[in-house]
Picture 1 (tube, helix red, strand yellow):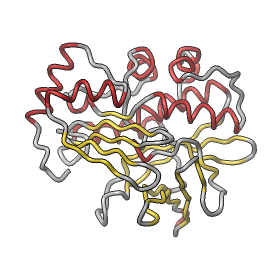
Picture 2 (tube, rainbow, N blue to C red):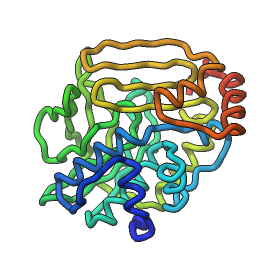
Picture 3 (spheres, rainbow, N blue to C red):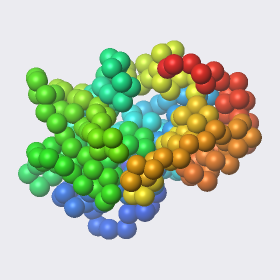
Picture 4 (spheres, rainbow, N blue to C red):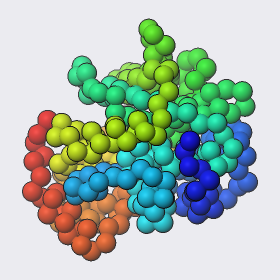
Length: 277
């Protein structure tokens, strides 16, 4: 389903810094997931530049692996699913509804994976930006799930709905909710079209770059850089146009070629960063 046979697994494992012998078990799933999240950033720069996001595995591999770029959820999930499928895992997907924007009812536009390992189903999500779990989460787990200094939980609601929550300094916050119905790569194409082109999409008309790590979560949205620490400490500052290319390289490990960098600066400086998207 995920074109795993077409993926250069060795190049992918080198990209994420994984030097083990992958097997279709929970240990490998945790190690690959964690390495992927820490190595490959979340970013929408192609969308910000008005470029189309391609989701065939070769295009995703060329961008995230060979060009050492990042991507947003459909690219991360496509790449991770292909790698896990190639290793031997059974991989499914779900469509999720973002709940980080207050009471707003958002469309189902986030893509997550459900992976079978060691007789259990695991939520695998490498593409929810700076709040993404570092490791997969056992969907049968009860109560808190600690991942180093960060804490998550999976709640259950009516109609089989699952909700991923993250503990913050002021209590639990819902990140997203997903139903048990599976989605497929063709559904990613539809969600990708909306997220990459609709004027109400959070990713259109602004720069977004994010990274999750054990000690700090970094997010650049519009012109605001936020760094979140496990103790609740938060740093915020405004990023000027002449800083953005250097910041993307230093903070997120994203380097653009010269023409792309110049166009991004122009887009960044001209963008309406006050709009409520």
